[in-house]
Amino acid sequence: MDKSKIFVTQPIEESALKRLQEVMDVQVHPDASRSIEKPDLLEGLRGCDYLFCRLGDVIDAEVIEASPDLKFIATMATGSAQIDLEAATRHKIPVAGRSVPKTGFEPDSIIEETADLAWTLLMTAARRILEGVELVREGIFPGGQSPYILGSKVNEKTLGIIGLGRVGKAMARRAKGFNMKVLYYDTYRSSDFESEWGAVPVSFEDLLKESDFVTLHPLYTPETHHLIGKREFSLMKPTAFLINTSRGPVVDQEALIEALRYKEIAGAALDVYEGEPHPKLPEDFVAMKNVVLTPHLGSAVAEKREIMTHAVVDIILDFIAGREPDHLFNPEIYSAQDI
Image 1 (cartoon, rainbow, N blue to C red):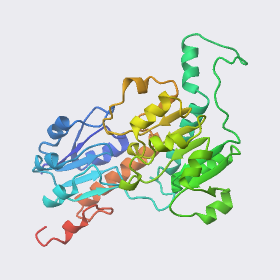
Image 2 (cartoon, one colour; image 1 turned 90 degrees about the horizontal axis):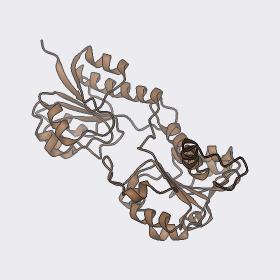
Image 3 (cartoon, helix red, strand yellow; image 1 turned 180 degrees about the vertical axis):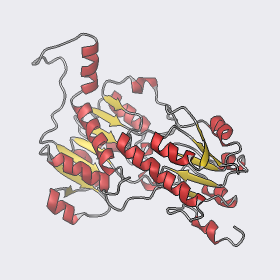
């Protein structure tokens, strides 16, 4: 009996790949440098029964309807924003993803990894690390007490956290190790956390006015679209830095570019962008000295990615074994009489 076929949109860890190969004919798109383009996705899915995709992969109605053999979609994402659930449900294709952790301690949680990256971005921007690297590569050594390249102090400064969820709280814990004053803005109070870690709730405007570093950790919703824009930059200190590891559209990118260009703020460090999975960043923005840009590395830790990948393999193997997978995004199809 022929094995079922699965298409995987990017290379996965060898240990997870072997588990799939034991029960399936596995086809893997070899390019890990970017999210898969639609022509490659359509070609790869031809004749496949299963799809293993990632956060940046756009699985729209055209892709689903062009894949008549498709029986199941599993995504490494914890949400289904880039999958057309209506089309999948119409074609009776279950869609499942990784669960959303309830705390920061589940094996596949990326809370601490995301906070690590946000803190790295903050330090890199403040101390002008990338500019320093370039000086060394150019053979320039200004000397230990030269004013040639001066960064910003971090210790004992004020960190403003917008969105005191799990990642926001992880940032607050890191900030206390640097003797920082921690302000936060959130629609919900975290009284216990305030008492334990000294985080101070303030208004949105006051946080922007008083913070030396503003780090963004809200959920992305219609209400938080362009939460930070022209007005917000005008409220920030000219010596302040913006850090964003949440979602790109939380920041009005054009307004940010203007704020950096005219030195309304000192700098910014971003891991996420408008237009993902294929953002188009202006050349002058990329070339700015006062901005640090990374390609969505929040969960890019080898140990954690292996755990995340195995979690998706578990979902797929459950489905093959006839078990209804956990964390279905369209469970209603299982209640349909003709499924």
